[in-house]
Image (cartoon, one colour):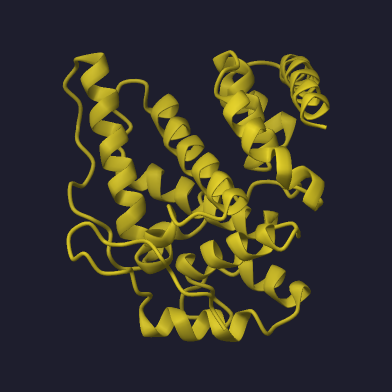
Amino acid sequence: MASPLTKVNSKTHKVYQRRPGIETEIDRAVAQSDEYLAARAQEHDTKSPDYLHSETLVHLHRRAVRMGMPGDVFMIALVSRCEANLKGTIDNRTPQVEELREEILSEFTVALAEDAVQGGDDMDYFECMFNSAFSTLRIDMYNHHVGLLNKTATAPADVEDTVEGDIFAPGSKGMPAKGTWTPPNMEDLVYLREVLAFIKTMPREEQEVLVLCRLQGWTQKRAAEHLGVDVRTIFNRLERADVKLASVKEDAL
């Protein structure tokens, strides 16, 4: 059975409630095998009986990590859908559009990872109305981005995406590679909170490769193409970042 949500809606002053269909989908999903769920997470046809709504994927990721198991397959599926959403909702004429899209993806990815590890309720709204929650994040960060640039740009849709739709189908580049980094055991869960906080203090170029290659599961080749550098540069940045992260773990033990 799906665990109850605890976050209170600031507008209604009531605890968030999942839609009945999502509640039922989660209840059925948690009774299925890990292998079957991993296969279902790759299904992007919304008419398929194996399709998992984004709200369910959020729940399954949070549940897996809190139980000390990898939740990377669910994270990868969510990131792929969000990536497609950003390509379809933020105009290519927006100044520094690729950087903006990457910042939004990074913000979502880190927030989901932090929430899963800490056992909080910050992502409860994403389990109720994922599209609406993500569009709020997207619009807020877009407005901040354009405000900092002090430039006029084509605005994204200023209404919330309240219905699951084709915009969450995978983008033309396909699914990110498997291998998203998630805590392999309970020992790692203890210090992941400090790791995530430490990542935010790193130079931007190291933050980028960690989020792309460790959290979002991109290959070094894809990250290099996205950032406009060679693979060796990505390798070196990851190596420097990994050394720093290793020191955080040593300090936490």
